[in-house]
Length: 118
Image 1 (spheres, rainbow, N blue to C red):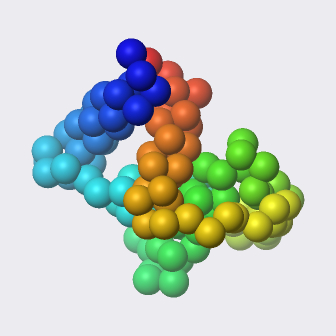
Image 2: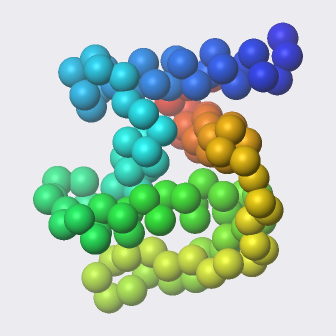
């Protein structure tokens, strides 16, 4: 099976699992899944977030997802429990489709580590 086919199958399975768990079956989009990962990484799942906090959660998720690729490195948790990352390497200029593939690949890897999918 080609790498692209495997990624597509894993992505579709992951979207199905998360959509059934978090959105009553309506397919979650990429940004929604990134947001969920941010909430997971922050660790305070049963709380309402303000608009700026939601953006921060997405930033946390992106840093965590791209950490294995060498773009970010975890630094510390602040006094409120927010994780902070530092940039190790600038992201390359990618077209929108390439960004999407990179993020999907990183998200699939994240959930493979957590054994939500195989």
